Image (cartoon, rainbow, N blue to C red; front, top):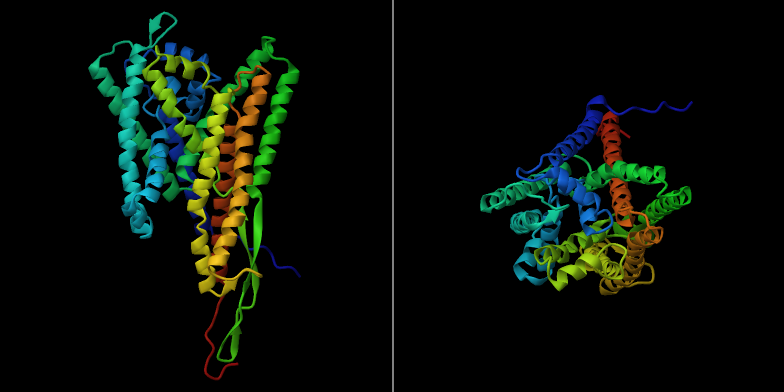
Length: 441
Protein backbone atom coordinates (compact mmCIF):
# COMPACT_ATOMS: atom_id res chain seq x y z
CA UNK A 1 0.00 0.00 0.00
CA UNK A 2 1.40 3.36 -1.01
CA UNK A 3 2.37 5.70 1.78
CA UNK A 4 0.51 9.00 2.00
CA UNK A 5 2.37 12.10 0.90
CA UNK A 6 3.84 13.84 3.94
CA UNK A 7 3.19 17.55 4.16
CA UNK A 8 5.79 20.07 5.09
CA UNK A 9 5.89 21.21 8.72
CA UNK A 10 3.69 24.23 9.21
CA UNK A 11 6.44 26.31 10.79
CA UNK A 12 8.91 25.67 8.02
CA UNK A 13 6.33 26.31 5.32
CA UNK A 14 5.63 29.68 6.90
CA UNK A 15 9.31 30.52 6.40
CA UNK A 16 8.87 30.35 2.61
CA UNK A 17 5.58 32.22 2.87
CA UNK A 18 7.33 34.98 4.82
CA UNK A 19 9.98 35.34 2.11
CA UNK A 20 7.26 35.69 -0.53
CA UNK A 21 5.37 38.14 1.70
CA UNK A 22 8.51 40.24 2.22
CA UNK A 23 9.00 40.37 -1.55
CA UNK A 24 5.44 41.54 -2.15
CA UNK A 25 5.66 44.17 0.61
CA UNK A 26 8.88 45.65 -0.75
CA UNK A 27 7.49 45.71 -4.29
CA UNK A 28 4.33 47.41 -2.99
CA UNK A 29 6.48 50.07 -1.28
CA UNK A 30 8.27 50.64 -4.57
CA UNK A 31 4.98 51.02 -6.44
CA UNK A 32 3.74 53.54 -3.86
CA UNK A 33 6.91 55.61 -4.23
CA UNK A 34 6.43 55.71 -8.01
CA UNK A 35 3.37 57.94 -7.49
CA UNK A 36 5.07 60.45 -5.14
CA UNK A 37 5.97 63.42 -7.39
CA UNK A 38 8.66 66.02 -6.85
CA UNK A 39 7.28 69.49 -6.09
CA UNK A 40 7.29 72.24 -8.68
CA UNK A 41 6.39 70.20 -11.81
CA UNK A 42 3.21 70.31 -13.89
CA UNK A 43 2.53 66.56 -13.77
CA UNK A 44 -0.49 66.78 -16.09
CA UNK A 45 1.47 68.50 -18.84
CA UNK A 46 4.38 66.11 -18.25
CA UNK A 47 2.03 63.12 -18.54
CA UNK A 48 0.72 64.45 -21.85
CA UNK A 49 4.32 64.83 -23.04
CA UNK A 50 5.13 61.18 -22.30
CA UNK A 51 1.90 59.97 -23.90
CA UNK A 52 3.32 61.26 -27.19
CA UNK A 53 6.65 59.47 -26.64
CA UNK A 54 5.43 55.87 -26.65
CA UNK A 55 7.75 54.55 -29.37
CA UNK A 56 11.06 56.26 -28.60
CA UNK A 57 13.65 55.96 -25.86
CA UNK A 58 11.81 58.32 -23.51
CA UNK A 59 8.77 56.06 -23.60
CA UNK A 60 10.90 52.94 -23.16
CA UNK A 61 12.75 54.31 -20.12
CA UNK A 62 9.46 55.49 -18.67
CA UNK A 63 8.16 51.93 -19.03
CA UNK A 64 11.24 50.44 -17.34
CA UNK A 65 10.75 52.83 -14.42
CA UNK A 66 7.13 51.74 -14.07
CA UNK A 67 5.78 55.18 -15.00
CA UNK A 68 7.95 56.98 -12.41
CA UNK A 69 9.49 59.23 -15.05
CA UNK A 70 6.04 60.14 -16.34
CA UNK A 71 4.97 61.22 -12.86
CA UNK A 72 8.43 62.70 -12.19
CA UNK A 73 8.45 60.92 -8.87
CA UNK A 74 11.29 60.43 -6.42
CA UNK A 75 11.91 57.02 -8.08
CA UNK A 76 12.21 58.49 -11.59
CA UNK A 77 15.79 57.25 -12.05
CA UNK A 78 14.88 53.76 -10.83
CA UNK A 79 17.66 51.17 -10.75
CA UNK A 80 19.44 52.40 -13.88
CA UNK A 81 22.20 54.29 -11.97
CA UNK A 82 22.87 51.15 -9.92
CA UNK A 83 23.06 49.02 -13.07
CA UNK A 84 25.42 51.52 -14.70
CA UNK A 85 27.61 51.53 -11.58
CA UNK A 86 27.60 47.72 -11.58
CA UNK A 87 28.75 47.68 -15.21
CA UNK A 88 31.58 50.09 -14.43
CA UNK A 89 32.59 48.10 -11.33
CA UNK A 90 32.70 44.80 -13.23
CA UNK A 91 34.71 46.33 -16.07
CA UNK A 92 37.16 47.87 -13.60
CA UNK A 93 37.48 44.51 -11.85
CA UNK A 94 39.15 43.13 -14.96
CA UNK A 95 41.40 46.19 -15.41
CA UNK A 96 42.31 47.38 -11.88
CA UNK A 97 44.56 44.91 -9.97
CA UNK A 98 43.23 45.97 -6.55
CA UNK A 99 39.63 45.24 -7.52
CA UNK A 100 40.69 41.97 -9.11
CA UNK A 101 42.32 40.92 -5.83
CA UNK A 102 39.16 41.89 -3.93
CA UNK A 103 37.03 39.75 -6.26
CA UNK A 104 39.16 36.72 -5.34
CA UNK A 105 38.91 37.24 -1.56
CA UNK A 106 35.48 35.68 -1.24
CA UNK A 107 32.54 37.31 0.56
CA UNK A 108 34.65 40.03 2.21
CA UNK A 109 36.02 41.19 -1.15
CA UNK A 110 32.61 41.09 -2.81
CA UNK A 111 31.14 43.18 0.00
CA UNK A 112 33.87 45.77 -0.54
CA UNK A 113 33.16 45.90 -4.29
CA UNK A 114 29.45 46.21 -3.52
CA UNK A 115 30.24 49.17 -1.29
CA UNK A 116 32.18 50.83 -4.11
CA UNK A 117 29.21 50.15 -6.41
CA UNK A 118 26.91 51.95 -3.98
CA UNK A 119 29.18 55.00 -3.94
CA UNK A 120 29.25 54.97 -7.74
CA UNK A 121 25.44 54.73 -7.81
CA UNK A 122 25.10 57.88 -5.70
CA UNK A 123 27.56 59.80 -7.90
CA UNK A 124 25.79 58.76 -11.11
CA UNK A 125 22.38 59.56 -9.58
CA UNK A 126 23.57 63.07 -8.64
CA UNK A 127 24.85 63.66 -12.18
CA UNK A 128 21.73 62.29 -13.89
CA UNK A 129 19.48 64.13 -11.43
CA UNK A 130 21.09 67.44 -12.31
CA UNK A 131 20.83 66.72 -16.04
CA UNK A 132 17.16 65.84 -15.74
CA UNK A 133 16.40 68.92 -13.62
CA UNK A 134 18.25 71.19 -16.04
CA UNK A 135 16.47 69.68 -19.05
CA UNK A 136 13.03 69.78 -17.41
CA UNK A 137 13.44 73.46 -16.60
CA UNK A 138 14.22 74.32 -20.22
CA UNK A 139 11.66 72.03 -21.87
CA UNK A 140 8.33 73.38 -23.09
CA UNK A 141 5.34 71.34 -24.22
CA UNK A 142 2.12 72.60 -25.85
CA UNK A 143 3.24 76.20 -25.38
CA UNK A 144 3.87 75.93 -21.64
CA UNK A 145 6.67 75.12 -19.20
CA UNK A 146 6.89 71.72 -17.51
CA UNK A 147 8.41 73.29 -14.38
CA UNK A 148 6.17 75.71 -12.51
CA UNK A 149 8.86 77.45 -10.49
CA UNK A 150 12.44 76.73 -11.46
CA UNK A 151 15.71 78.09 -10.20
CA UNK A 152 18.82 76.88 -8.44
CA UNK A 153 16.92 75.84 -5.31
CA UNK A 154 14.51 73.68 -7.30
CA UNK A 155 17.40 72.04 -9.18
CA UNK A 156 19.12 71.24 -5.91
CA UNK A 157 15.90 69.85 -4.42
CA UNK A 158 15.29 67.70 -7.52
CA UNK A 159 18.84 66.40 -7.59
CA UNK A 160 18.77 65.42 -3.91
CA UNK A 161 15.27 63.90 -4.18
CA UNK A 162 16.15 61.75 -7.19
CA UNK A 163 19.42 60.61 -5.60
CA UNK A 164 17.67 59.72 -2.35
CA UNK A 165 14.99 57.86 -4.31
CA UNK A 166 17.61 55.87 -6.21
CA UNK A 167 19.42 54.99 -2.96
CA UNK A 168 16.12 53.83 -1.43
CA UNK A 169 15.30 51.71 -4.51
CA UNK A 170 18.78 50.19 -4.29
CA UNK A 171 18.12 49.36 -0.62
CA UNK A 172 14.77 47.80 -1.53
CA UNK A 173 16.44 45.61 -4.14
CA UNK A 174 19.05 44.43 -1.66
CA UNK A 175 16.37 43.66 0.93
CA UNK A 176 14.41 41.60 -1.60
CA UNK A 177 17.55 39.65 -2.48
CA UNK A 178 18.44 38.97 1.17
CA UNK A 179 15.01 38.47 2.77
CA UNK A 180 12.76 37.62 -0.17
CA UNK A 181 12.95 35.40 -3.22
CA UNK A 182 14.60 36.22 -6.51
CA UNK A 183 16.99 38.96 -7.54
CA UNK A 184 15.80 42.26 -6.10
CA UNK A 185 16.93 44.59 -8.89
CA UNK A 186 15.50 42.33 -11.59
CA UNK A 187 12.19 42.06 -9.73
CA UNK A 188 11.93 45.84 -9.44
CA UNK A 189 12.37 46.18 -13.21
CA UNK A 190 9.89 43.31 -13.63
CA UNK A 191 7.32 45.14 -11.47
CA UNK A 192 7.75 48.34 -13.45
CA UNK A 193 7.20 46.60 -16.80
CA UNK A 194 4.22 44.55 -15.60
CA UNK A 195 2.61 47.67 -14.10
CA UNK A 196 2.80 49.29 -17.55
CA UNK A 197 1.11 46.34 -19.29
CA UNK A 198 -2.55 47.25 -18.45
CA UNK A 199 -1.96 50.73 -19.87
CA UNK A 200 -0.55 49.26 -23.09
CA UNK A 201 -3.53 46.94 -23.43
CA UNK A 202 -5.90 49.84 -22.76
CA UNK A 203 -4.24 52.01 -25.41
CA UNK A 204 -4.44 49.17 -27.92
CA UNK A 205 -8.15 48.74 -27.19
CA UNK A 206 -8.69 52.49 -27.56
CA UNK A 207 -7.01 52.42 -30.97
CA UNK A 208 -9.22 49.48 -31.95
CA UNK A 209 -12.37 51.29 -30.76
CA UNK A 210 -11.39 54.40 -32.71
CA UNK A 211 -10.81 52.21 -35.81
CA UNK A 212 -7.15 53.20 -35.86
CA UNK A 213 -6.17 49.54 -35.49
CA UNK A 214 -7.87 46.57 -37.09
CA UNK A 215 -8.32 43.10 -35.63
CA UNK A 216 -5.69 41.54 -37.91
CA UNK A 217 -2.92 43.73 -36.53
CA UNK A 218 -3.96 43.02 -32.95
CA UNK A 219 -3.90 39.27 -33.59
CA UNK A 220 -0.52 39.60 -35.32
CA UNK A 221 0.93 41.43 -32.30
CA UNK A 222 -0.55 38.82 -29.94
CA UNK A 223 0.96 36.04 -32.05
CA UNK A 224 4.37 37.74 -31.96
CA UNK A 225 4.18 38.00 -28.17
CA UNK A 226 3.21 34.33 -27.82
CA UNK A 227 6.05 33.23 -30.10
CA UNK A 228 8.52 35.38 -28.16
CA UNK A 229 7.36 33.96 -24.82
CA UNK A 230 7.59 30.39 -26.13
CA UNK A 231 11.07 31.03 -27.56
CA UNK A 232 12.27 32.59 -24.30
CA UNK A 233 10.98 29.68 -22.20
CA UNK A 234 12.50 27.13 -24.60
CA UNK A 235 15.91 28.80 -24.77
CA UNK A 236 16.12 29.62 -21.06
CA UNK A 237 15.50 25.97 -20.20
CA UNK A 238 18.00 24.67 -22.78
CA UNK A 239 21.44 23.48 -21.64
CA UNK A 240 24.37 21.41 -22.89
CA UNK A 241 24.96 18.32 -20.74
CA UNK A 242 28.71 17.60 -20.53
CA UNK A 243 29.44 14.04 -19.31
CA UNK A 244 31.68 13.84 -16.23
CA UNK A 245 33.36 10.62 -15.09
CA UNK A 246 34.93 10.21 -11.64
CA UNK A 247 37.95 7.94 -11.26
CA UNK A 248 37.87 5.03 -8.83
CA UNK A 249 40.08 5.21 -5.77
CA UNK A 250 40.57 2.66 -3.03
CA UNK A 251 40.79 3.59 0.64
CA UNK A 252 41.45 0.50 2.71
CA UNK A 253 38.97 -2.14 1.65
CA UNK A 254 36.48 0.32 0.21
CA UNK A 255 36.39 1.68 -3.34
CA UNK A 256 35.13 5.21 -3.87
CA UNK A 257 34.18 7.01 -7.08
CA UNK A 258 33.62 5.48 -10.44
CA UNK A 259 30.21 7.04 -10.97
CA UNK A 260 29.29 9.27 -13.90
CA UNK A 261 27.28 12.50 -13.95
CA UNK A 262 26.66 15.53 -16.15
CA UNK A 263 27.66 19.17 -15.92
CA UNK A 264 24.90 21.38 -17.42
CA UNK A 265 25.92 24.58 -19.21
CA UNK A 266 23.00 26.79 -20.13
CA UNK A 267 22.65 28.21 -23.62
CA UNK A 268 21.99 31.64 -22.14
CA UNK A 269 24.21 31.68 -19.06
CA UNK A 270 24.00 35.48 -18.80
CA UNK A 271 20.20 35.49 -18.36
CA UNK A 272 18.48 38.87 -18.68
CA UNK A 273 21.60 40.84 -17.68
CA UNK A 274 22.76 41.71 -21.27
CA UNK A 275 19.52 43.46 -22.35
CA UNK A 276 19.28 45.27 -19.00
CA UNK A 277 22.90 46.45 -19.26
CA UNK A 278 22.44 47.43 -22.91
CA UNK A 279 19.30 49.43 -22.11
CA UNK A 280 21.13 51.15 -19.27
CA UNK A 281 24.07 52.19 -21.44
CA UNK A 282 21.71 53.53 -24.11
CA UNK A 283 20.79 56.26 -21.63
CA UNK A 284 24.08 58.05 -22.19
CA UNK A 285 23.41 59.30 -25.78
CA UNK A 286 19.89 60.24 -24.71
CA UNK A 287 21.26 62.26 -21.78
CA UNK A 288 23.79 63.94 -24.07
CA UNK A 289 21.02 64.77 -26.54
CA UNK A 290 18.91 66.26 -23.74
CA UNK A 291 21.85 68.50 -22.80
CA UNK A 292 22.17 69.74 -26.40
CA UNK A 293 18.63 69.71 -27.74
CA UNK A 294 19.24 72.58 -30.18
CA UNK A 295 22.47 71.13 -31.62
CA UNK A 296 22.83 68.86 -34.63
CA UNK A 297 23.74 65.94 -32.37
CA UNK A 298 20.53 66.34 -30.38
CA UNK A 299 18.45 66.38 -33.55
CA UNK A 300 20.13 63.20 -34.85
CA UNK A 301 19.58 61.32 -31.60
CA UNK A 302 15.98 62.53 -31.35
CA UNK A 303 15.04 61.49 -34.89
CA UNK A 304 17.19 58.40 -35.63
CA UNK A 305 18.26 56.87 -32.34
CA UNK A 306 14.85 55.40 -31.45
CA UNK A 307 13.65 51.79 -31.17
CA UNK A 308 13.06 50.28 -34.58
CA UNK A 309 15.61 52.45 -36.41
CA UNK A 310 18.78 50.89 -37.83
CA UNK A 311 21.20 52.84 -35.61
CA UNK A 312 19.42 51.91 -32.40
CA UNK A 313 19.11 48.24 -33.40
CA UNK A 314 22.78 48.04 -34.43
CA UNK A 315 24.05 49.53 -31.18
CA UNK A 316 21.63 47.45 -29.13
CA UNK A 317 22.70 44.17 -30.80
CA UNK A 318 26.39 45.03 -30.39
CA UNK A 319 25.94 45.79 -26.68
CA UNK A 320 23.84 42.65 -26.11
CA UNK A 321 26.47 40.42 -27.74
CA UNK A 322 29.31 42.07 -25.81
CA UNK A 323 27.62 41.75 -22.43
CA UNK A 324 26.59 38.16 -23.20
CA UNK A 325 30.23 37.15 -23.58
CA UNK A 326 31.44 39.42 -20.79
CA UNK A 327 28.92 38.33 -18.16
CA UNK A 328 29.18 34.65 -19.14
CA UNK A 329 32.94 34.80 -18.57
CA UNK A 330 32.24 36.13 -15.07
CA UNK A 331 29.53 33.61 -14.20
CA UNK A 332 31.28 30.52 -15.60
CA UNK A 333 35.06 30.48 -15.06
CA UNK A 334 36.41 27.57 -17.06
CA UNK A 335 39.79 27.44 -15.29
CA UNK A 336 38.21 27.21 -11.83
CA UNK A 337 35.70 24.55 -12.91
CA UNK A 338 38.45 22.45 -14.52
CA UNK A 339 40.63 22.77 -11.42
CA UNK A 340 37.79 21.72 -9.10
CA UNK A 341 37.04 18.69 -11.27
CA UNK A 342 40.71 17.69 -11.16
CA UNK A 343 40.84 18.01 -7.37
CA UNK A 344 37.79 15.74 -6.94
CA UNK A 345 39.02 13.14 -9.44
CA UNK A 346 36.57 14.08 -12.17
CA UNK A 347 37.32 14.25 -15.87
CA UNK A 348 35.60 14.46 -19.25
CA UNK A 349 35.93 11.20 -21.24
CA UNK A 350 38.55 11.71 -23.94
CA UNK A 351 39.82 15.02 -22.47
CA UNK A 352 42.84 15.31 -20.21
CA UNK A 353 42.24 16.96 -16.81
CA UNK A 354 43.60 20.44 -16.21
CA UNK A 355 44.41 22.85 -19.03
CA UNK A 356 42.89 20.69 -21.77
CA UNK A 357 39.61 20.51 -19.86
CA UNK A 358 39.59 24.29 -19.42
CA UNK A 359 40.17 24.73 -23.16
CA UNK A 360 37.31 22.33 -23.88
CA UNK A 361 35.01 24.32 -21.58
CA UNK A 362 36.02 27.57 -23.28
CA UNK A 363 35.28 26.08 -26.70
CA UNK A 364 31.84 24.80 -25.68
CA UNK A 365 31.04 28.02 -23.81
CA UNK A 366 32.01 30.15 -26.80
CA UNK A 367 29.66 28.26 -29.10
CA UNK A 368 26.79 28.32 -26.62
CA UNK A 369 27.27 32.02 -25.94
CA UNK A 370 27.21 32.74 -29.68
CA UNK A 371 23.84 31.01 -29.95
CA UNK A 372 22.62 32.67 -26.75
CA UNK A 373 23.66 36.17 -27.84
CA UNK A 374 22.02 35.67 -31.25
CA UNK A 375 18.84 34.55 -29.51
CA UNK A 376 18.89 37.59 -27.18
CA UNK A 377 19.44 39.97 -30.09
CA UNK A 378 16.64 38.42 -32.13
CA UNK A 379 14.19 38.46 -29.23
CA UNK A 380 14.96 42.08 -28.38
CA UNK A 381 15.07 43.53 -31.91
CA UNK A 382 12.79 41.53 -34.21
CA UNK A 383 9.48 42.18 -32.37
CA UNK A 384 10.27 45.91 -32.38
CA UNK A 385 10.90 45.82 -36.13
CA UNK A 386 7.77 43.79 -36.83
CA UNK A 387 5.49 45.98 -34.71
CA UNK A 388 7.02 48.99 -36.44
CA UNK A 389 6.03 47.51 -39.79
CA UNK A 390 2.43 47.41 -38.57
CA UNK A 391 2.66 51.10 -37.54
CA UNK A 392 1.57 50.31 -33.99
CA UNK A 393 2.67 52.40 -31.01
CA UNK A 394 3.45 49.33 -28.92
CA UNK A 395 6.42 49.88 -26.59
CA UNK A 396 6.03 46.52 -24.79
CA UNK A 397 8.44 44.79 -27.15
CA UNK A 398 10.89 41.93 -27.12
CA UNK A 399 13.18 43.41 -24.47
CA UNK A 400 10.31 43.78 -22.03
CA UNK A 401 8.98 40.28 -22.69
CA UNK A 402 12.47 38.83 -22.31
CA UNK A 403 12.97 40.51 -18.93
CA UNK A 404 9.50 39.59 -17.67
CA UNK A 405 9.67 35.93 -18.70
CA UNK A 406 13.33 35.53 -17.69
CA UNK A 407 12.84 37.05 -14.24
CA UNK A 408 9.67 35.02 -13.69
CA UNK A 409 11.45 31.76 -14.58
CA UNK A 410 14.41 32.57 -12.32
CA UNK A 411 12.11 33.50 -9.42
CA UNK A 412 10.15 30.26 -9.77
CA UNK A 413 13.42 28.33 -9.81
CA UNK A 414 14.43 29.89 -6.51
CA UNK A 415 11.02 29.22 -4.98
CA UNK A 416 11.24 25.59 -6.08
CA UNK A 417 14.77 25.37 -4.63
CA UNK A 418 13.45 26.65 -1.29
CA UNK A 419 10.66 24.08 -1.34
CA UNK A 420 13.09 21.27 -2.10
CA UNK A 421 15.37 22.31 0.76
CA UNK A 422 12.41 22.39 3.14
CA UNK A 423 11.39 18.89 2.08
CA UNK A 424 14.95 17.65 2.59
CA UNK A 425 15.16 19.17 6.08
CA UNK A 426 11.74 17.72 6.94
CA UNK A 427 12.90 14.27 5.80
CA UNK A 428 16.03 14.44 7.95
CA UNK A 429 14.02 15.43 11.00
CA UNK A 430 11.46 12.66 10.53
CA UNK A 431 14.12 9.97 9.95
CA UNK A 432 15.54 8.48 13.13
CA UNK A 433 19.16 7.40 12.65
CA UNK A 434 20.39 5.54 15.70
CA UNK A 435 24.09 4.78 16.17
CA UNK A 436 25.04 1.11 16.01
CA UNK A 437 26.05 -0.44 19.34
CA UNK A 438 29.15 -2.48 19.92
CA UNK A 439 27.31 -5.73 19.64
CA UNK A 440 24.90 -4.58 16.98
CA UNK A 441 24.76 -5.84 13.45
